[in-house]
Length: 442
Image (cartoon, rainbow, N blue to C red; front, side, top):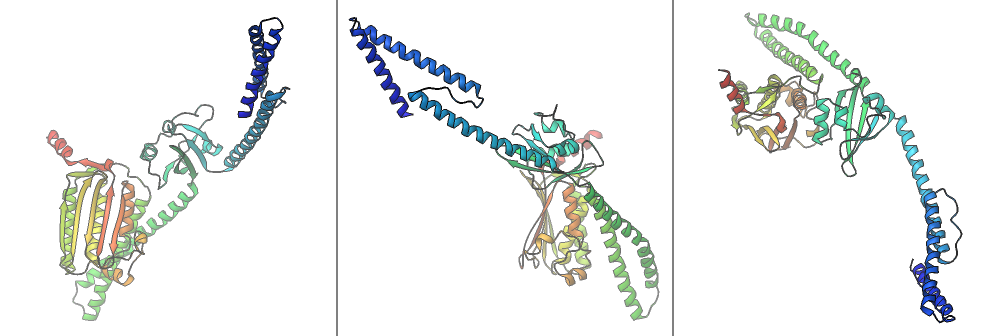
């Protein structure tokens, strides 16, 4: 560029000098210099017009012929244009390759821009989500996928866990939505057809539910006869055997009931309807039941209840009662005699929280990720002797998922354990609102 500028300056000076020299022949050097400059300017304008015409055509033809610095400039532009055209063709080939490969995918792929508008999607998204390229491009994604659960999931911005919903165009198809953020506010939405997996899972759940239901009748009969025999004056060995049979029958009934409850909870990740739950009387009742249990087991635990908030929860009362009582009764079962158990409910900016803490033997960190699995036991002998079914924490996990909440576990061997349920702010209801409504109804 500097060489070109220098050459143009030299050319300008030479044109002015040549004009002035010619003007001396007529005694008008100034007019001669002016004529030389005008001639130089006309030449530059003609060359610039040729360059502009060639650039506007942009058809890959050779640049116009020129000499000097104009020739060098045109050659350099031609080389740059050729390089850019090669890069453009390469990028177009990559885009075509990407579109061909994405079109072959069975998963629906949608790109959503920073303004939440649809930018691009593949053909599978047409089939699974009902998107139409002719009319839907550039429209807000929440205007086309209108399920309230998807809208909450999309706006929440926390995409660690996928969302499962029926297809908006075919209720027989079940889709799993996974969103990934990229770029500056853009998002990649992947919709996967999990209908077959859902059917297999439903078959498993139906089998567990049916088997558990069928077990209830023979267990009821067995327990009834055992209780009848226990009312009789039996020899000591037979009475001991009958007592053990009664204990195991009760345990089997508890297992069947938990299996039926878990099967029902697994049928959906969302509660059908929400009601305001009065937490204070519920937690006070669970506290009393825990005191009765510790006295029955002769453990003499010191069980405290601390309610630091007047907020209630929206949800299903029986499910939340089952979850909270499972955590509390587990603490009673597994905390050594004369230990301390603390129940607490509080709220803050992140939502509502219920915790159960004990000063028992604690749990090694290697077991914590698997505690909510069905029938997983840290200590098989200790868990069996406690009378637990091994399904309590699995029930807690599914109840919390259905209420948009999650369970956290903090435990160290010899330091005790804390199980905490964390509910999002949208599930909180001010207890004062309930009292106002009640007063108004009277």
